[in-house]
Image (cartoon, rainbow, N blue to C red):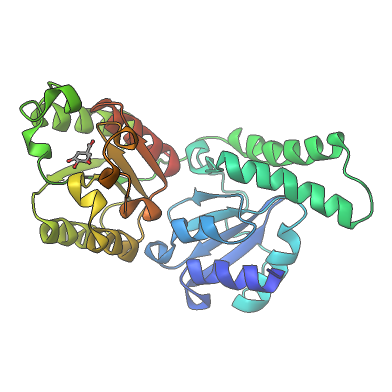
Length: 302
Ligand code: DQA
């Protein structure tokens, strides 16, 4: 993809030019401030060509990491497309909280970052030495590290929704060899406690045996909740409607399964919801929810 195409894809993921209030360039990333943060689709942003990671920036912003070589051209095109002058960082001098700067970079993307660095060096006819690659990787790390030293500011108020699908209300009774002896009340307690410890201001837990009720609950989360942890139970393997609902609201979502589904029957090997999820956690019993909640908190900058 060209710089222009990448900039245009990024713009699409942050609600279009009308939503962009300001943008600025830092060593490795675009910093975008928007009018309506609900229009930012972090999942789609993560999938844009060349994006190495994303980070929440304050209450109305997002950072999109491209790496030091690629970011300049994309920034220029982004400024052209938005018509917003990119020279002034509206938050310059305003230090953000360290937790807001946690950049979600998947291991796969880190590898691709190093590969991109290599390719760039080759293109410029200077064979990439191992040191060059290392330096570039370090540069990205340094950029993050630099900002991590900034003084603390207010933590963002983040709300978590936990959804459990059919038969998860039967925990403790239902096939304890597979799903454990702890009941649904224990799961609720665990989620509330984990969410509080992770810094969420609110944690709503919802369970239903009905697909439509789960779709309704997901739709209602739009504009209210910042993260979703979901175990759709058997609907994992059948429900396009639940997948579509999660995609529609576009909030970061993590899939959890109590059992190790990957080692079970063939029909459990399909997960529709997975394509809309940041991550899938399986086989950790109800403790998997705690892991998911902590990962979500990290993803949201708590
Ligand atoms: C489950 C796995 C599903 O296959 C099953 O239908 C469930 C629970 C789990 O948590 O392991 O209901 O999602």
